[in-house]
Amino acid sequence: DGGITQSPKYLFRKEGQNVTLSCEQNLNHDAMYWYRQDPGQGLRLIYYSQIVNDFQKGDIAEGYSVSREKKESFPLTVTSAQKNPTAFYLCASRSLYYNEQFFGPGTRLTVL
Amino acid sequence: EDKVVQSPLSLVVHEGDTVTLNCSYEVTNFRSLLWYKQEKKAPTFLFMLTSSGIEKKSGRLSSILDKKELFSILNITATQTGDSAVYLCAVEGLAGKSTFGDGTTLTVKP
Image (cartoon, rainbow over all chains, first blue to last red; front, side, top):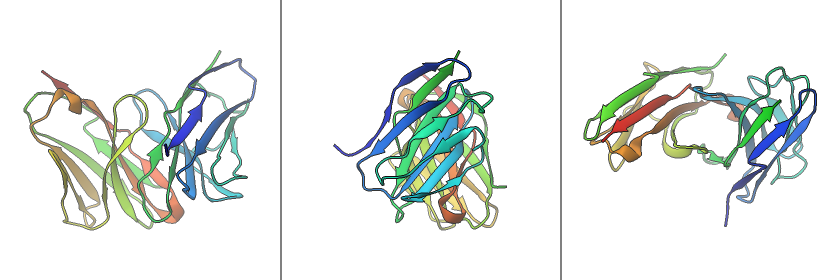
């Protein structure tokens, strides 16, 4: 079954702790993306990667970090420097030949 | 900075009505415009538009792009309650970067 998985589905953390969100895809896609979605808003781009070992900042990268050591994996770390981390986080991937993005089910992060 | 603006932000209609959702954009090095439907969690792909004036259709949904005026519309005819969702417009620009609008929340009442 091809697709994108994100884990966990729900995550709770105390303020000041770093937390890493997982994103894995078996679609053999080169490009992967992380978005943040707040209530009533669209998706805002955090980081994206078009190739292994390379990634670019999106519009709201401050307080986040990523790595792309393997083609199928693009984990996102929400650091303590992120001032308002409570949100819904979506990971996506796409082939470099087609612009359609395929999304994972999302992780809802709540910082207490 | 790339920008995508969707209107209206929300819309309530009755089953059978026709709706038009709007998306305007300002993007450096435009590559394509995409429409997605988000019902609960993950957005799902509807259309990708790259050329002006060519209508894409899928059942009761259709979409068209105007690259001169920098906008796109998404039409839904004979709406059903299952069409209730957030409709997202996204534009792909330079080097694979995507910019999304805030979405239009469509509610279809029986």
